[in-house]
Length: 107
Image (tube, rainbow, N blue to C red; front, side, top):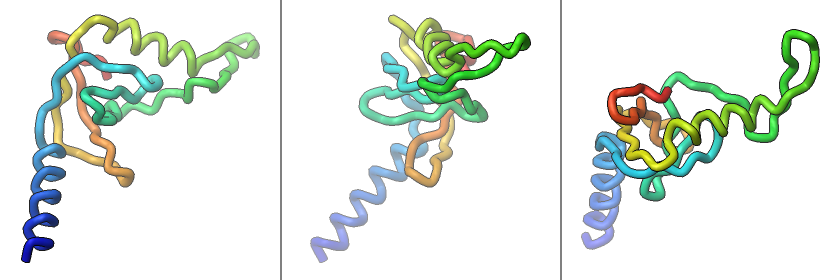
């Protein structure tokens, strides 16, 4: 019986976390992922290059597009409170949210 209630409590915490809006200072992981309060949040409908990924520009020259994407998200969130809304999760259990700095959608 105690095991049942323990499992139920864990489920309720996860379900509540999946639906809750999350607000706080963000640490940028890469161009489409942040951490707030230890929670991994993927930005909804965004697929940025990985931090070490290189891309070709119009002239065919390589440039560090992954680092640029990461830096762009850092510049949007640095020293700001980020508010993330939504209720989706991915297969790994990461939260998928639309996030804002003040009224600006950073996705």
